[in-house]
Length: 215
Length: 290
Image (cartoon, rainbow over all chains, first blue to last red; front, top):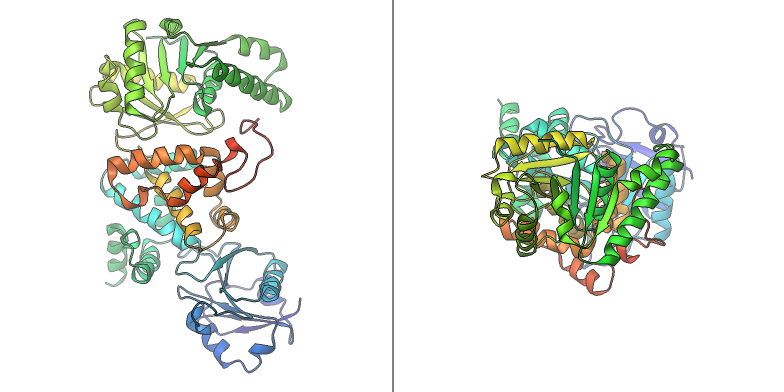
């Protein structure tokens, strides 16, 4: 399916060229908007309503911030998306595709076709803070950091237990240190503010790492 | 001390898996349950597993009779008197475990070590009702035990150093990978896993995404071997409730409370793989990995 691409700069999903960014056409039924200004670009689009689907790259915000909401009846041809990425690590192949209550099925299908056509794996979710992965992983990450402070086990033993016990390729402590504790702080802090759930409050070690980046 | 004969008390999914590990490693293995049908089912599943191992080239066909010959099923607790170590894998209920160990203490000779495969209950508390808390150790195998190498080993407050060393050496002789953890609720694995699985269920309850989409996301993005709903179906909703009740009862942490959806699924008969339907549908009841 042919699609156009608008790159507003600073995309976390596509920091380097990718099949999705390289195979865009000058005209197409689907519009893909990437970068930190994707939402503003959507609102400035003159032909948004005529497209089969418009894909808006999201940060930590909800899709409704860009489309507006209407008592649970919102939705049409606009979808949000983001490639999952932990801190400084490369983006993964997983795209969270965000729909709204009244998103048109044909728009969802068109969006999936474009993303999967570029070799990405698509998981569909509704429009909630943190989508699937940040929503599920950040409390777990915070708990591992807290229990490390409390002396449940050494970092190495906790990582080994979770790798061998659950088939994880990397333990959570090593993963957070590799991808950036300060970056974890920023995401979980945003979710704590959005959801009000104490499980998302940044763990002490994440706060320390963030404060050190601020001098 | 030298361990030659292993007894596994409880023929559920975990007990049968631990018995496979012990027999495969060359130990004479007694498998005990109060119900003959449970003993028979465990033996059938074990034989099916080993036959599959032969098909996959992981076990020499000529050795199959020898390996199966090491396994003896029994419903007579007195038969466990021959064991050098008894690994308990019964219901996660402190009173049930205390009752079993009190009987075993009367039956087994003084040198027999007692181990519990509990995933949530304090080793010190279970050992307190065993009559030999100095010869008691936590040995938490992971599901499915016949495939997973990790064993969380936890000493209770009164476990002797010699007991822990003997159990540690035995665990290595099983071909497993022991990790030492504190005697803390859920040890390491379940302390993190139970709330994480509950969080995943709450995403479904709250309409964030469907189970299959969540599993796909976590496996693709994180490289995890299983998604939370695939794992929950293997654990079973009935077991998840007990795990939650045990963990929440000990920690009082909100994330450990059992989501309402789990109880509705139990009422609907959707226990997971064991009942043929959980978050996914299943067409057979073969043991995982068979």
